Length: 167
Image (cartoon, rainbow, N blue to C red; front, side):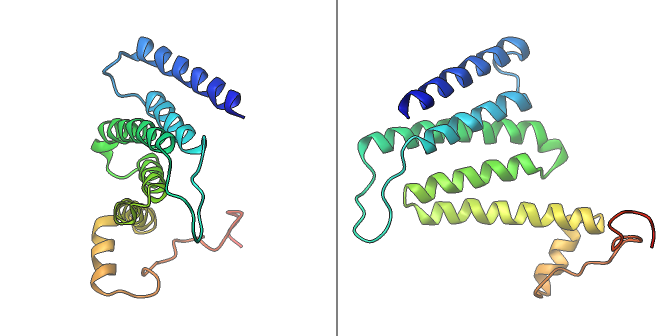
């Protein structure tokens, strides 16, 4: 199993180097950000600590993998913020936040995991509200000022019509 991870890491490292040569080492690019996130995800998957009652704390090897994952995941998030910052929220940013939350959960750092998940949730809520209403920030402010089980959604013409045929 370790050989598969090793081969995948080598492939991703080579792909990242190709991106850096093609786009420039300091140029943020969606492909580079994706590869960095995959490198971080791979580091998380190599070995997971035991969970449940009486589980041991993560080993030194786990901590090294978590540090590697953190380095790649934070670089990916930063790059994605540079890329999508002008456009605001983006699914790629939300995915990066989710992976960082997973890392912190594995480290048993629940306050940090919760913080990343809260940022991800707010981002996804704004994206959904913007898609539905056209103004995510204003709709989110109204929704949080008057909390209800679901945001006030107004059906667009044909919204219930899955095939777009109008009836």
